[in-house]
Image (cartoon, rainbow, N blue to C red; front, side, top):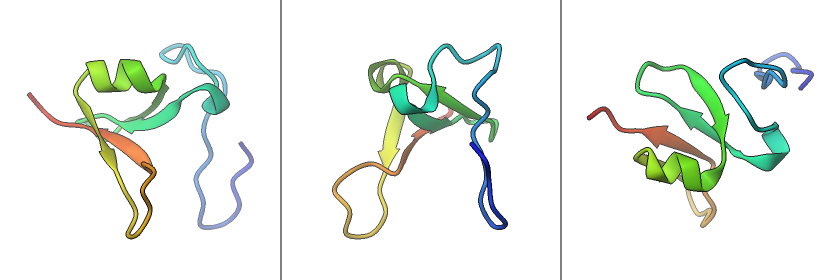
Length: 66
């Protein structure tokens, strides 16, 4: 919410997002734009999980161009 140098912040108010960051997952669209979506919605739209090395939990999700 309040980025420090070297970090990026998530906008809490966005006309394209209907969830707050603590309610959803970060999704990088094929266009490079980031959105916060519910995990089920992200997966239904074809987003795949992106993992950091040695971490079983997704770091974010990435939409694959169709």
